[in-house]
Amino acid sequence: MSLPAVAHLRLRLSPDCSIGPGKARLLETIAETGSIAAAGRRLKMSYKRAWSLVEEMNRGFREPLVASARGGSSGGGACLTPAGEAVLASYRRVESRAEAAVAGEITALRALLATPDAVSESPLDEAGRK
Image (cartoon, rainbow, N blue to C red; front, side, top):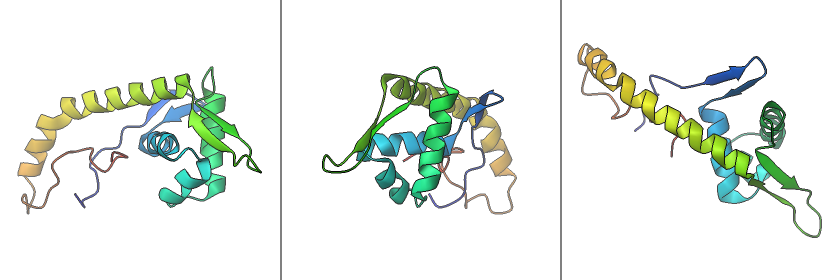
């Protein structure tokens, strides 16, 4: 599915805390790779940017979402905390419900396109999902 998404769900939970497809994908990729640096590389994001987003999320929630250990001889690494796993799962549930809620309207809008055959299957498919 190569078309851009028609909707990106970003939840602004407070003036200083939000989560959207980019942060959710970063959390997923940290869980997959065990590393903030590796997650950043996979997402074509600088380490500084990935680290900045992790720090922002860790500050925004009551408990840190990502735990990290410095590199060196032990190699360091990162993983999602239970809070991180809960936030990611909750975001994905909200995203799924939002997609279901707008699916009919998206279908109706796409039927009005000049080239209706050139659409992707899901209105949120490029919004950070695998």
